[in-house]
Length: 154
Image 1 (cartoon, rainbow, N blue to C red):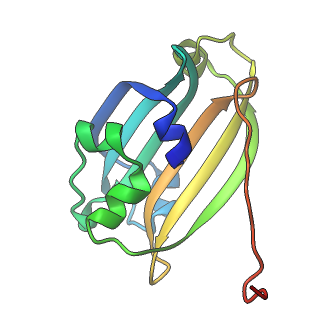
Image 2 (cartoon, one colour; image 1 turned 90 degrees about the vertical axis):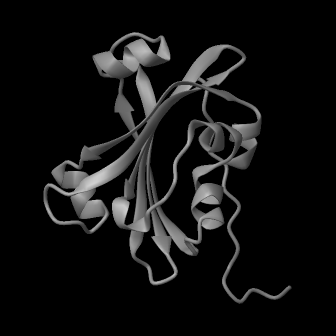
Image 3 (cartoon, rainbow, N blue to C red; image 1 turned 180 degrees about the horizontal axis):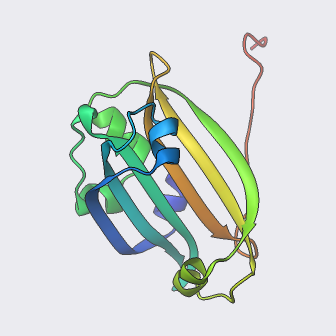
């Protein structure tokens, strides 16, 4: 996340509050119709759109989201800097096809393949604090993870 933030720019940044849909309420363990803080943007590399990212935050966290902070940092760092202690991320990688809105934002044809990431950030009590949906152009995205075994010999 930090590397992508350093190597890319944002366009179409939106910061607002909204009523969460049923799926987001379920992911964040909120009552139906709850209000959440919402951030979305298009991620650009070398002037070309590579992804569209949406984030929903629980309003009870009282996170201050500013355009400057979002452009200069990562959401994880913003959460941690404002006192949210993170314990992990529930991370799902999948695929989908570009619907008209995503095709337009990403400058691709409707129906082109996209990598779909869904992440739910968990606090130290394993309560969800943020839900992220990210859609990346399949021709511009590579997913890299390094995993270690808990308690592995050093």
